[in-house]
Image (cartoon, each protein chain N blue to C red):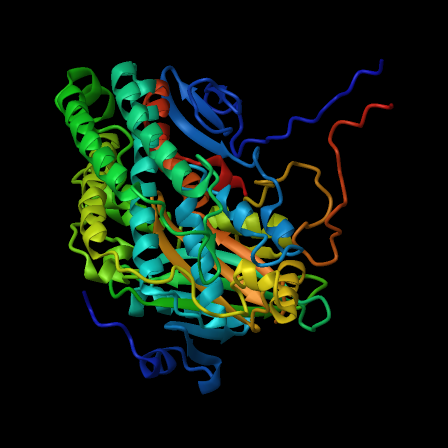
Length: 405
Length: 159
């Protein structure tokens, strides 16, 4: 048996022998960081002087893989970017392809996508808050939040057939309509959500331990946040009310009434509170959407991208060929390029697609919020204590799937 | 919210050929020469408030000369307009100026673009591999990098 010598794959961007600092590796596989990421910290006592954040442990060649699959075959891959809110990824991607094909989705699809986006946002924020509270020792809060999240996952499984990776969006519509009674159960879950987040507010908001660990920790200024590309709840926690749903409304957001919650200080506590308030706004939006949801088809009647009805595939040759071509060659997307951005739970999720005409993308690039946030994470960590890395990292909600692609 | 700049405003500010600036799907699209990039971005940031640097990536047109498009996306948190900048760079030594002096977020994104496409960023002194590992050969998002090509760090066990 020959011994294998591996090079140390990570070279930090600072030297260990300057100033007597101690270099500590946190991760890539550490019980208190959710997500495989390596934080190399230069410590002076307990104080973090410099930080080098290294990601890429979950890199799986997503963008390369996309170049050899049809536009519809990509939808399951896209799900796996942010696996806490796969539906938002689906819808953002489908909207980008629809923009290239110049398709306008049906009203029912538009409202349903909006509703499900907000529902996913709740699930994502619940995951983030639950995990970051648990890391501070709040086991009860974790169980309350994850219980609600699990209700949502089970409920989405009743709609899409999967708990996490839904593959529910389609170019030109959705996979299927909502089943009977689904909206009734949605109402029940929203009531339970309100009950349990009320308890979380009671447990956490004025909790001395929680405030000591999060107030004035991981502070970032609005100017720095914009310069380092922070978007979403992190940018809003600094007091900048920027939200794509409000600023450049897409889907049905222009017709909804909602507020954009902002923080004051840009610290961990503000990020926790902004996420809590955003979930309340999402519930408010879902209730409006349940009343607005129109009847009608969920997919456009466009044979360039939507599969023909099954009974026609089995009974006439044109539909059979249509079905075959769509599956084997993919929808024929006209040449062009497009960038569409949706407000994902973590910030701006953008898809940049280049088509040369045909069934597969020529180039597909994802502007994922987590990746950009990891580029600025050292601004949140430097100058605080070693133990503060955990709550700060939790409040950023890094998702390995979309960060490393 | 301030008013978004008009197409004429952008054209007047940047002083390039009129057909180099167009609007596509509500987004300004600017075709720039590599030498003009840094000055143009500086003007866009200071005069037209494109303060959020969203993204940089490249598109490899293997048959074309110059071979690469380097594509930048910007957003303005003041007037919510978007801009896409495209710079065409030739193959043997594709280099553009780094935007790290203007935007902090450029550090990470240029590192990714460098390792994936082999685009050099003049002025960015930290272009270590980010998603890939030290010693990885080639640039996987170039079109001439085979998709199935493997570079295992640990040799495969013999069967």
